Amino acid sequence: MKPSPLQKIKSKSKTCLLAKLVSSRNPLTYITENVADLDTGNLTLPDALADNGRIQNHCSHLSCLKCSINDGFSVAGYFAWSLMDNYEFGNGYTLWFGMNWVNFTNPADGREKTSRKWFSMFIIKQ
Picture 1: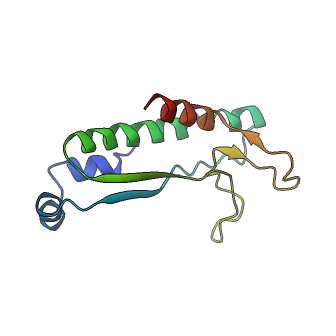
Picture 2: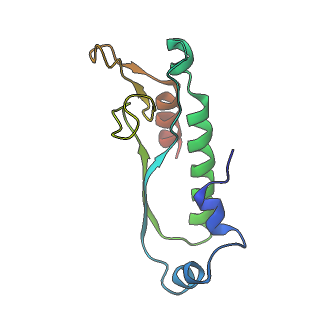
């Protein structure tokens, strides 16, 4: 798994500009559209619903975010992308971003993915 953007910010490789901005101004920051795009087009429905890669992605990002907040970064919000699988202009229906599975031929047949259950419990515990 690639290091998260938050890990990169905290690493020694951060840019001088970013280091100065954070140390001198510490702007109020919102993490928006944090995403794990999983190509689950060839998976069975049970495997698509058990989206452990998305859970690992959010867990690692949120752990780094917590460390950043503890280190003094001013973080005002975190938005996971996305609530539901959706259509992407560049990729059509091939990438699955959502915490809820969408049956694109029958939208009424939506299902909760494991990541949604995990995310809900994570937020409640915090």
